[in-house]
Length: 204
Image (cartoon, rainbow, N blue to C red):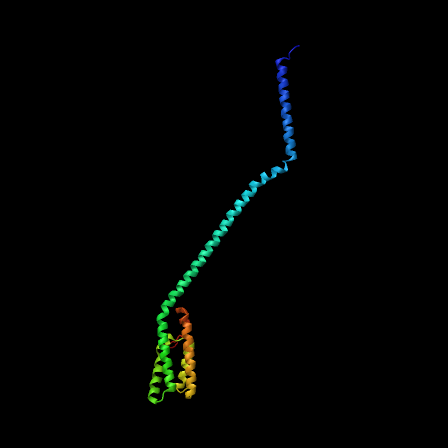
């Protein structure tokens, strides 16, 4: 039997190779047209989900950081405000002590004027009352006390004609105003205390 020439054998091999490559291309093209099987879908989705989770975690961390910073700033401000209030109340303590002493003296003088059994004692008590009214009381009295002192003083300067009973009524009103003022002042800062006083001037 005669053998094929070498050129014919080479051509046959090349044709067979081309046929195989064409078959491979047809299969790949068919696969592309058909699409990947459904069970390949999770492998495609997982990287996307992982990226989204990472991005969400990143933004959540930023939000948490900002919230924590805002909370810290608020706590620092509240602590600073508390410390300032404490410092102001320490500062006002001398005024509170002077206030209690002056209020006690003013109430004693008013009670003595209303209930003294002799003119000399009454005159001395009236002098004490006016001395406090025009002096130390101005430093420590609040508006409610100032009004009660003025009301009682009208019985002494003749602006009102007051019986002993009326003077005692005004004296008790003064006592209530003094007690309320001391309770309120104990909770005030210095700025609040000053704002609750009359601001006297010497004129325009």
